[in-house]
Image 1: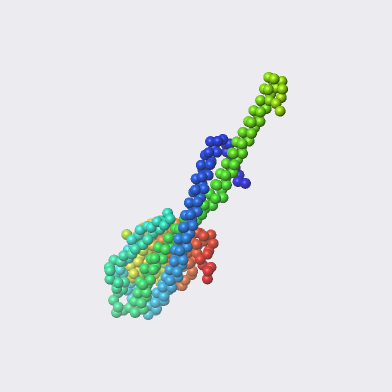
Image 2: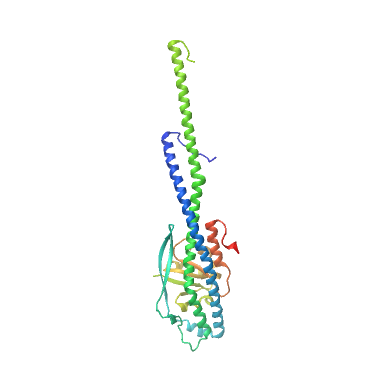
Length: 219
Length: 106
């Protein structure tokens, strides 16, 4: 049995506890619904996250292979010079989306110039074509990388929220509600007991008074 | 207006500069931690970090798990895929569900 904190066995306390129990039960139901819905959405997202990540990792690795080839075929200085002053610049617009009271970010990216070829910030004369391939493959994977960032952050935030909600549900279900019920039971018992003891006392007093006044005993 | 940064050893990240992302080459984990904190304080919404570096900075990364921005995302570097990125997703699942139900399907 849950250890009971000291409660006053009064009617006022009883009414208060009953009200509290109603709120607790209602809160428990709502939180449980919230947890279930969060979980459903989370699982959807996490599956997407997994496939996105596998895709992005494969893409980056392919790009890295191309970069390795480019490095092998070119002098270090030439490579450094080629990438020294990038023409393109990416900036992000971030807004938040509310999913079951969890704020998750959504990103849209803008490039400084609309021209797709601006990722090649060098003349083609002194660089190997492997470098072009590498940069192109990296550029192709970038939108997915951004989606991955969005999705992964959402998963992390939702996981934290689910954990919190689960704890609350469990605390209500296994601690708060049983304790309240036990207290209510205790008070009702105590009040009933008091009632009975008053009844008996009254009966006894009646007997004594009858004896004194008329000299006979009631049955 | 937010920016995107890439953090890691130079060989793994120099290509991202061409796309217009900001590359921050670091050599040691200590320097990485300092740069990461530095970037997080400024207006970077997404910070990609190589898995090799992320492995040494797990404590730092966990600080950003529950904040809205920035999103710190591990990516594989030239030295190959260490599985760290997938492990992070796994961690989320474990945190939410209590046990891993997505990744042992294989």
